[in-house]
Each structure stands twice: as structure tokens, then as C-alpha cells.
Length: 101
Image (cartoon, rainbow, N blue to C red):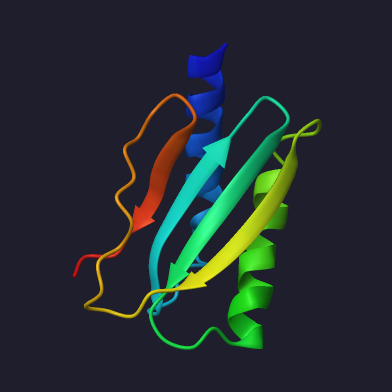
């Protein structure tokens, strides 16, 4: 079951990101349990109201794929060249997008 949830989150997350990646997004990480999914979006530069609205669109697209799971979004500013947090993909965490730098 854990493996299926991982597959579902990755596929739904990739689908939700289509057309939504803007140049100042450095990375998008997803963490999940059976009841929730948390998207962490890392920005390069100031996070604008427009950026937050687009992140909420991504979250809503992801939510549409999971009827019984809550989706939350966290925003964080980490300007290049500061290093991104090291995320080791696992049964409950993965990288959905990583900008080439």
C-alpha cells in the first residue's frame, strides 16, 4: 500500500505541476501519510502573492486526485546559490521538481 501511495503522489504531483512551474521555483518536494500530503515549494527570490496563488492552484489540482487526503502547501525562500535541503526519496517523501542550477 505504501508503494502505491508513493506512485500515486508522484504521478498526481507531476500532473499538477504541468504548466505551473515558473522560473523562480527551485524545487518542489512532497511528503505524505495515508491521510495527508504536504507540498513544500522552494522559491528563489521574493515570494509574491501571485506565486502563492499559483501554489494553491497546484495544491487544488493535486487534491482533485485524492478524495480522502488533505493537501497543504508550505512556501520557503532559499535564494540561489544557497544550498537546498537534502531530501532523500523514501516511502513517504520525494522530489517532484528540481530546477537545474
